[in-house]
Image (cartoon, rainbow, N blue to C red; front, side, top):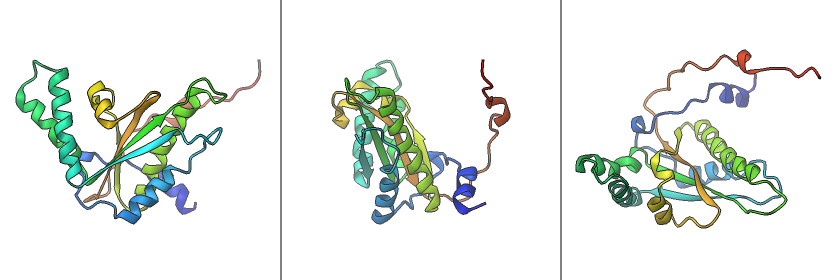
Length: 190
């Protein structure tokens, strides 16, 4: 097997909370973003965009997450809301992949959204190929209207995922996966 097949067959997400703060360099991040940008794209729409969080911006956005959480959960313990400030500090780089759908055109909305999902997957594979840990998360804040507003998302936009990128202290362990053969059927006609 070649290296790409080996990579695809062994790629494993690393939990953001276990990442080290050794993240991709600016050039490596550009490579990861470029790999995301190379997905199949019916109609050449490019129905996605990126919002990058690095350095102090991660902590600053943590305040936004805390405030949004407190607003959505007024009965929550103050310590629980304060924990939200740490979310983006779990990794040195967090990239919001935003799905940017154009309605009422020849390209179905579903295909445009799938393209944004493919962007996330390509980024995970590229980060892994470069030796970094990566995890694709949405969690509550991808769907919260206050967070969406703070991100500046417009009509037809939504978060496809937050890609956490960082270092890893060890290779991630394999997890149990569904049996492939139970998910494969072969159509044989009517």
